[in-house]
Image (cartoon, rainbow over all chains, first blue to last red; front, side, top):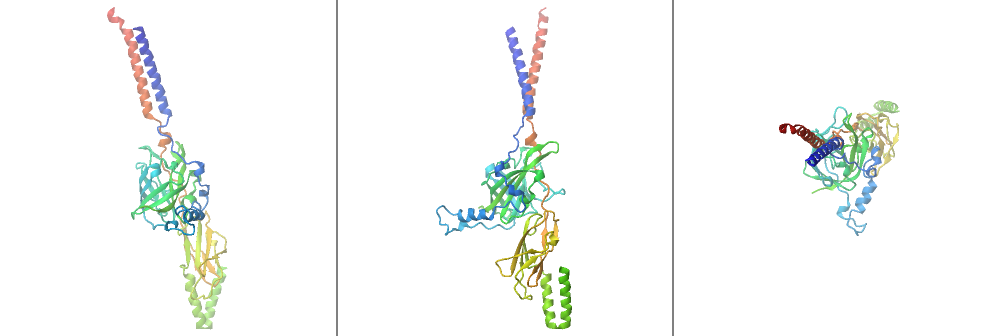
Length: 242
Length: 181
């Protein structure tokens, strides 16, 4: 009898201790890990410079004209696929697909807020992205910009939570209203302080069609309710999908 | 400088009216070319503060006749230097200049003049559109701040279960001898 009682007391004490430990841990562990962000090596320092942020003409020339053909093809005998694809006419983007991070999302067209920041979808629709419609359309010359939320209280991780995992070479498909698909290839990704946001590198004109995907990232400041930075993914047009 | 040129043109017009119909004809045909803005191509249009913008001018004109050997972009209205020399392009009579607009230029329409050496003056119609100056707010910090409330609930449940059973055990021990006595 005495042994049983001692065992009960020990069990109760253990469960209380475990419970208190769990409750403490629950208050001090994050339910989700903070959003990922690209390493410094992927960032484009030139993105902060005026008119930069576009793939250099030389890169396009060597990458596509010489290297695009099948291996072993004579350099003086370029095939049809050796020429860069023609930019597309302006058409409103409707949907986005990024297989590398398993994103499929609707795109809505939004402009500017009175405070000068771009409008973004409501936090109640955290899986919808928005295209900055005063700017160029994806596939047309210039830099098209698409925003998405990183997280939302309603769901936790939102549509662009994994944006910071994209790396050079990953592909992005944008479906346009005219039923064509513009395909882009990532050529850089960076985490930038909001106070140092590379506006010109992001929105600045590029002769070749480019795309920028933007979400929030870096440290979160609970007092202001805002992240301190933005994750920006830079991509270049590589042609039309099927 | 332009005021002087305009005055000279006006004087020339007056002179033409006085001197004869042939010269007057030439000068009145020159003036439509000066007013026209179509011979200038701007890329990109609209442009943005701080970005590089290319002006391409076609100095050809039915009336000015001669081939232009150079052209100058008057950059003062854009906050740039007054005389920006333009480079001859591969097309005949076409000149090109790429400038970086000041980051401080305000949004709006600008009409910088371009003077060709053959006497043609073209007016470019440049639209400057501001880019968003404020970074977007895309997220509410849920994944960066939300603590695991499920874990807390389970822990609190376990602790209170232990507390209740502990109280039960203690009270049972205290009351058990009574019925026997």
